[in-house]
Image 1 (cartoon, rainbow, N blue to C red):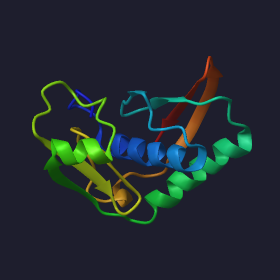
Image 2: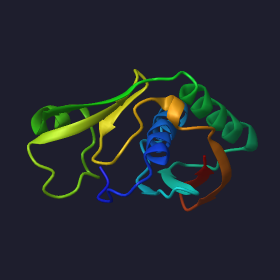
Image 3: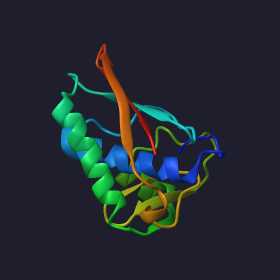
Image 4: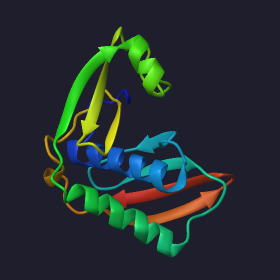
Amino acid sequence: MENKKNYDPQMHSAEHILNRTMVNMFGTGRAFSAHLEKKKSKCDYHIDRNLNVEEIKSVEYKVNEIITRNLGVSEEFISKEEAESKYNLSRLPDGAGDRIRIIHIGDYDACPCSGPHVKNTSEIGGFRIISHDFNDGVLRIRFKL
């Protein structure tokens, strides 16, 4: 989904798990904006309120629980038409083509993506939310591995 090909595979895979966790727990949709770097990263979500300390701890716990499942990370290519019927393609780069790459993290998450990933969640390491804030309907979560 992202244009940058130099994303750290561990951080990028952790972002996918965080996104699915936020969708499952709070119905936010995937991050509409993300900045991923090896040392620390951030994701921005549309939501109507801030999360409390217990909710943040629950998100962190769930992401780590998924990481420790040692899930395989795989890719498949599907037609653009099929992808449009199953996924939000708004973050795909222009000219993504007629075959869309879908990244699967075990049975936990699947989404279109053009970036690098680990082969197994066991390669990610521990996930820690280092801070979060809420402004004008946007929740920003900063995290590191």
